[in-house]
Length: 33
Image (tube, rainbow, N blue to C red; front, side):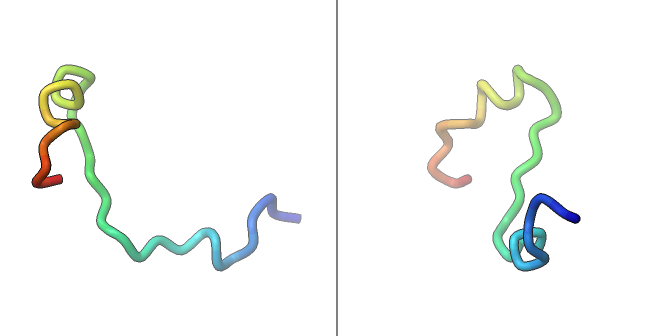
């Protein structure tokens, strides 16, 4: 039995990927994200 329903396993929004903690720290407050 899964912990989540199938509907919760589908993502329709945008994903943002950071390459490192430094990249995250530099870009996390960017309004363009």
